[in-house]
Image 1 (cartoon, rainbow, N blue to C red):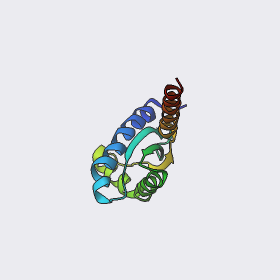
Image 2 (tube, rainbow, N blue to C red):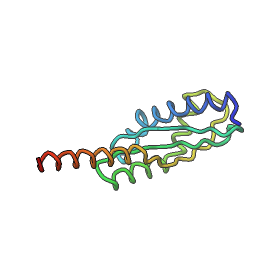
Image 3 (spheres, helix red, strand yellow):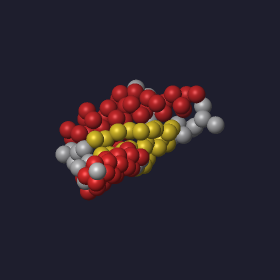
Length: 123
């Protein structure tokens, strides 16, 4: 079971990682494109590792994949920035995982709109 401290840190890391990506990493590399969202952060009970769930909505799958890859490649930079922002002695190692729920929801929304458009043409 997760400690209260680990749960609280998970919420803080979720906000802080988003801030680093949107405010600092976006200007460090031009490979961050589209809409990036940190959907969840899960800090391990021993506070040594953190799973960061990232959702990327790009103009196409290649742009989203490139953005996610850039985030993963800059994990050390993000961790370094977190250490300064959160003023902690140790910052967990960051493991980025892709969260496709927003992309899936967007796809379903487009399908529903297409169905409604087709129904309107048939009437």
